[in-house]
Image 1: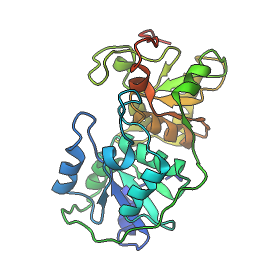
Image 2 (image 1 turned 90 degrees about the vertical axis):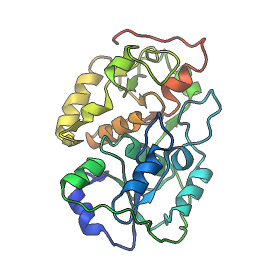
Image 3 (image 1 turned 60 degrees about the vertical axis):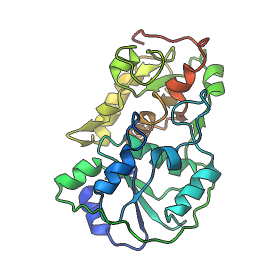
Length: 281
């Protein structure tokens, strides 16, 4: 495993550790209650539920995207309520694609919290390895987590607009390729992508349900980057979720992407005056 991932077998050995905080961040972008329902039906023993809307995102204004970034004051308050301490070893998981887990991982990292890993393959990998499930709610005390210097960078729409003509600048779009091309859009008011963005679906980071090796990811990202001079620096998607999976995967592969445009396409199209592309780029 890399420094950013933990395997199901390794997690199994850590269950019961006093410093372990296991966060279940399963979610569905079309159903805000799906995560709570799934958690109540069964979760990894000892896990606590981190709600995508309430704990991991900030308030929506109608112009800041579907899953805007929270303030770090709000985020740390929510994580303290879930028992996260400065000395905690945090493991986050979702159903398996790892997109929601990566968004929570990225948010911890932006808060300056380094000791956080994503369960490789998520709950599906846990169950495939024979991991137990529970519907019990764990008892825990409030934590003392506070924010410190960010370990990752969040890009604003102003920065994206200011750098669109910079030859050293590029966006990598993590949504499915059909949505990138403006096909079968079901979440945003219009289909397509931010002009200049290149496509790399986050689903391509996994094989057989778990992350590909750093060596394979390196080869695949190099093929994407080669399509344009200069280093791509910003990951984007629909609402700052799948972009975080690409961000983690790039870091696994040895690249240092500059950050994530959290507002992503849903924020971009909140203003009809902003251009949209449906071309392959």
